[in-house]
Structures are given as C-alpha cells and as structure tokens.
Length: 337
Image 1 (cartoon, rainbow, N blue to C red):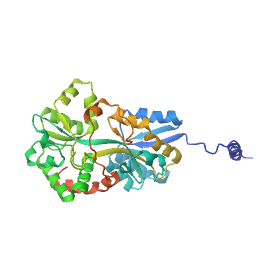
Image 2 (cartoon, helix red, strand yellow):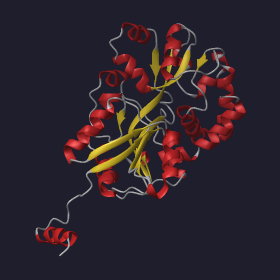
Image 3 (cartoon, rainbow, N blue to C red):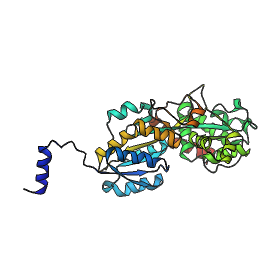
Image 4 (cartoon, one colour):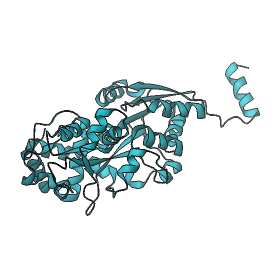
C-alpha cells in the first residue's frame, strides 16, 4: 500500500475528512497600517493558519497578480477605497464568495458581488471658524460657491478619495451638475492641490485656507494624538458632517476579496469571514479610527465618539465604483488635477 493510500485510509477510518489542510494564507495588501499586525496575528491564533503578507501599492500588487496569472500564490487582495476595489474587479482577479455569514453581517450596500467592505471612513469638511462661517460649508455643493473663492484646499483631484466623492455626486446630482461643481472647486482653490488629507487639515488650522475636505480617520488620528502640535491643530478647526439634510455624508471603504486562482480557498473564506467578526471589526475602529462595516459592533474610540453620530450616504458601494471613471473624466475637463 502506498503512503498516500495509507494516509487516506487513516483519515477515512477516523472521520477526519472535514479537516482544513491549508496551514498558510497569502495576503496581498495595500493597507499600510501598523495596527493591522494585531488584526492578522489574532486570525492565526484562532485558526492556526499562518498569514504570509505582501505589502505594496495597489498598482504594483495588481500588476503582480496579473503577471503571476494562474500560478499566483495570492489568496486575498486587500485595499482601501471603492475605486481601487472596482479597478481590481474589472481586471477579473476576484473569485465570487458565497458566505451566509458575510451576507448576514455586512450590509448589502457595503458589498459588491466579488468583494466585501470591512470598514468605513467619512469624507468630512474641515473649516477654520476665523475665516469661514459654519453655514457656508454644510454641504459638498457649497464648496463651489463663489463666496468661498480663495478659501478651498484639497489633495489631488485624481486621488481615489476625491474620485469616489465625485462618483457619488454624479449618482446623486448628475454628471452636468458635478462638472459645474468641480469647476467651482477649482475656481475657489486657495492653492494648487498638493499633499495628503492631514496636510489639508493642517493648512486650514494655519489659515492657509478656510476650508478643506478630508477623510475622517485623519482627523480622528490628530484628535487622539498626545502631541502638542497636533492638539494645537485640532483646537483651531471645526468639522462638519456634510449633506445631513439631503443624501448624507459620503463614505468610503476598506475591503477585500478572494482571488480567482487562490490555492487555499477554504482558508481564504475563513479569513474573509474573520474580518467581519466582532473582534476584527473592533480592530478597524479602535486601531485605525475607522467605523466598523458591521453595524452591531460597538465603537470604543474617543475621537470617533466625540465626532458623534451622523447620517451616512447609503449609496451601494458597487454603484459608486461604476462611476469613478466618469468622475475622472469630469475632473480632468474641469482642471481638477
């Protein structure tokens, strides 16, 4: 009797056919947060499945997956922003996952057919009350008002965070109105777009501009900081949940999906389901100042609690992703680069 046949016989005799044999999982991640170390480590403790993580920028990882083709060792692709997840989906790299647990825990508007959102962040308006009145900046649309000429700071219009906001505005207001809005934003620039979201917040505090758009977790990071300079920034600014009287504040996501050629499919599904567990969801909220995608999970983050509750846009994330390319064309025509 051969060794393989003998092992198979032993497994059958003892009823061990349901054992998960995959001892490793290969994750390609474009999330670069130190807090994720504990998130992944906890999965290994729970399951015994070792995670081999490759970190790089989104485009680098996607190119690598495409080049590896059917021989790719990658099981999971993780990244931030709906536009990036949509781009990955368009390349055909994801394999659909059927999971009752994921469908029960992740709200329908936060999942697409081939990938799932695991955390959310809001696109907030930050303003300097010495330069701008609160009533001037209650909506995204108001940022294009000529009354704010020379007051607006943003990062590049080609950045996925802003493209996703543009995509949402197309869905809610139409393409023509969104292009007019983009042109108004450009006309109101205090300076040419540059830097990241934290730079925009600091510029508002310094009086370089009166108002800016930023992702909420950058603001929460400053609020939770014990550095004197960060607390000085927070003391000089105020934040607004935009569009509370209309379609709600735009949110974006961090998400993941199983890859088409995953060699460890059962372990990959376990990992995706783990990311939707209460414990993993708490890591997203408390470790990186994001909101859990699972609505029942309690948040214990001082900054997020201080920012308070808000009405979030419930536009299905898949529909948002479908409009990103159009938003890029509109921003290009408007000179929002």
